[in-house]
Amino acid sequence: MTYKETLKWMFAQLPMYQLKGNSAYHAKLDGIIKFAEHLKNPQNSFRSIHVAGTNGKGSSSHMLASILQEAGYKVGLYTSPHLKDFRERIRINGKKADKQFVVDFIAEHQTFLNLHKLSFFEMTVGMAFSYFAAKDVDIAIIEVGLGGRLDSTNIITPEVCLITNIGFDHMDMLGTTLPEIAMEKAGIIKPGIPVVISETQDEIKTVFEAIANKNKSSLVFADTAINEHFETSLLGSYQRKNITGVLAVIGLLSGFEISSSHIKEGLLNVVHNTGLQGRWQVLAESPKIICDTAHNREGLTLVLEQLKNEVYGELHIVLGFVKDKKLDTILPLFPRKAHYYFCKPNLPRGLDENILLKEANLIGLNGKSYSSVNKAYQAAKCSAEEEDLIFIGGSNFVVAEVV
Image (cartoon, rainbow, N blue to C red; front, side, top):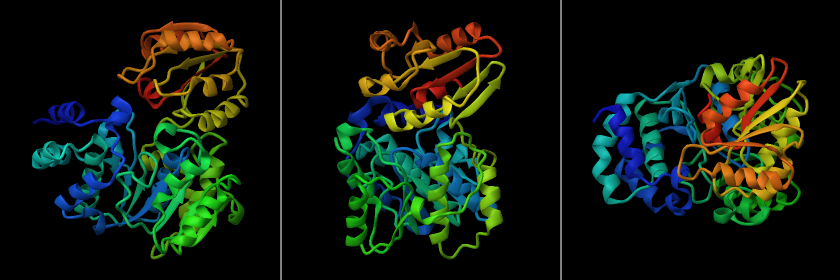
């Protein structure tokens, strides 16, 4: 198969959470453990850092990778989902996995994948671990896909665990209260492995303390332990919390020579070093166009607060969601004084634009609906004056169709 044919098979044959939702989520580790054994346990061939959380885990993972790259190490980076190209999920020093590796990997293991009915995510994790082992990385930054305890990435034994902000997302799978969700995220904590919590949240602090104590793991709440200040190339004031957690992780990482200069340059060159997209990304200046992948209440709260700091004439918002979002908790966050362009991201889970329009109208958010992200985006660009601002968000998939 060609690379294009291989991707077509992967997306068509393997259950993919991003497309299908809960039915594609395997809430157990049996599948990935079998697959890892079949692959001769590549995850044991490299050192790693494990990153979980509701918001900030992607940015934090890229920051860590960038710092370690600046220090001269060969760094694997596994993240999800991808925006444009599947290989964004698997990178080494910012370079996406080789197309031929993807083709050869699927060809070699296709029978196993079919026989054991693995999910898209289980397959991707196995592929990433195999790639990092084959390329002999010095360390890999591994971002949790969903939750933590039963996430397919949770077969690694990392050097340090990082847990970022905890919020209400995927409640149908992770729990309906913050302590329940925190318990799932804290499932990445392993015996004797130090763990960093980026942000102290009083409601769930004792959850992390109890699990860390049970595992005899040292625990650091970064926002109370770290006083250093560094700038980052990632725009958005909300990155301050992520930086603090990253600094704490670097401080606990043994066996690696990382100077203050490496940290400074790493944080200032995150996008250049790792290829990160979609975090308060400025696409144009006149009119100013900003996109952000924040897609839950906590993440959107931070992003919309940042939006208040912008100076513009009129505000235009291109907005779309997936079906499982609780609109009654998310839509009230958005400003009423804006022109809205409601749209449906191009995937089965995409929320119908007319349903979104109706729900938004009920709370005073006014605009028009469009059958695609591109049509909504083009309408916003046609309507906006040079001094205006266009914001694009609500979902990874909305942003992916624009960047």
